[in-house]
Length: 533
Image (cartoon, rainbow, N blue to C red; front, side):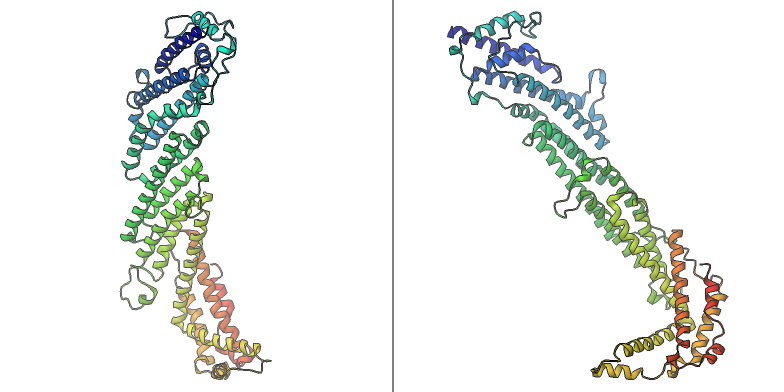
């Protein structure tokens, strides 16, 4: 009986090997003949023969999958439908996406096949006559009755059946990994071509490819396990794509800083600002629909999307600041005989640049921090712009110096109140106080006639101007332009009001009746002129 069983096992092994070779012509997604599954289960009682069959499964499916992948790449499906994937090489994202989708489908099919062949029940099942006698044995030229006779012989006395050892248990994941090993190299070669053969939009292409690798890598990891070689390949491709993205962004940033954009005559944002913003918007849009939105940069601890946006925005902002240096500064404006742009041109240009960067980014949560930063910088520039223009007018009518000197007296008065009950005064503080110990009205620079003339000159200058408030028309954003105009009016009104209040303060030594005669216009005059701003 033992010799009969041994011959039956060998006969069954040869039949299984022939069947496995025939699987090379089939798609892994097809259902496996139940007879083949039962035969593989029976062979588990002969570890050596079972190992031969498993080797045949791995070899044939490895070769078949390689051929199918190359055919899908170069020839496409039957009759050219679907088209060969390499026809899409001009669009790297679609090309790599098609390859990954094909791999996903193939891996699922191979996993089902391996599971059907290796995941059957133990060989002690007496299910030879289960109503499937009419099924053919594919590729062997025999019929199911022949296999049933063999398996009946195999299931003889239990003493004659070889006990399955732990070494005979084949890991289905290892077999699947060996099958998939055949497509790693052609896949990797084409990925390298997609990552290195692009220009123009290459950083966005590489970022999208990194998202694809991350997405499909996580899916295949659930199918193949953490140790799968194909999963490791996808992780390597993901790292390569991110590195290529960072290198491209760094190279573009270096060129921008080395060759800053030329300032347009109308001080509008240069083309590099609009182009960078468009790229950032495309990157953020890609992030929203990919798994890369949840990835974290190991170096900064920030989401990769945030790190990527910073790497793209900061260099263009720096380049704009370098370009702004070519414009006339506030200090040299007065001494320059021919000024192509107004005094505030430098700040207006930067406001336009920052506005061009942040406006399209407001809808993206990942860019919220950058929007806030650029908003703050733009608002600071607007107020500096308004203050500079206001100070120019105050200096022209002589009120700027008067306001500064009057401020010293106000500060000294505050110190006097704060130290009235103190018995210890330093010598330096005493000397400083001594310099301002005279009444404000006695100071030659703050004589009533001088101060009153400056206040009236300010009101008259505002009233006589064609524009009571500068239009700041080189600021492109109407809302920001209105902010600058409001800040300018506030600076002028505040300067007049504080100086006028100092004349009325009892402690400054001015006679109220003389103040009313010396100052023709009260604070209400400026409020009327500038109230509509």
